[in-house]
Amino acid sequence: MKHSEEYYQKLRTAMVQQQIIARGVKDPRVIKAMETVPRHKFLPPEEAPFAYADEPRPIGHGQTISQPYIVAFMTEQLHLKPTDRVLEIGTGSGYQAAVLAEIADSVFTIEIIPELAQEAAKRLKALGYDNVVVKQGDGYNGWPEKAPFDAIIVTAAPPKIPPPLLEQLKNGGTMVLPVGEYVQELVVVKKSATGMAMQNILPVRFVPMTGKVQKEK
Image (cartoon, rainbow, N blue to C red):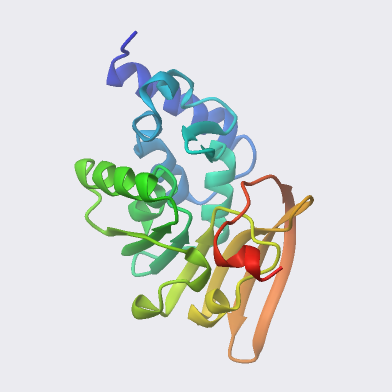
């Protein structure tokens, strides 16, 4: 059954109130982005009715779209400004990139699975996100040609933080990512001229990062 955009808008408004604001996300720009991005358009058609549920959902190729709260929470941790350039590792269906694009100046996102990268690029373009650039490749190495970045977000879990990503983060920048194998923690990294400050803030469960990172174990 195909639902109207008005129907999905009501579900989205309820999601933001019950899952995002009620759990303590306060940044008005993040809240507005979560209210704006049509999450149901970032899922396979059969999954669209479940787009606003309080859970991750499958997007094919063994990957998932993160729970809405986690998307909002991770985005809020970046403290984005309208002038920021953001790197995302793990495009998936493109939903997190769209949320970032509502707030930041530009988003550069890397996806290792070719089919997902192509689908996300097409979807983001169709939805008018002209400030997102999608690249198919291994996110472990980051995107040196576009560095440095004001913020970096990683949506797949490496066993440890990839050094190239730390190098590509600007002084004064923030990175948020899940780290670990069997037990994962959401880590916030703040970089300054004097070094890195890292804080574990939440136990999480993400799909593992694949590619070069697996050879580094």
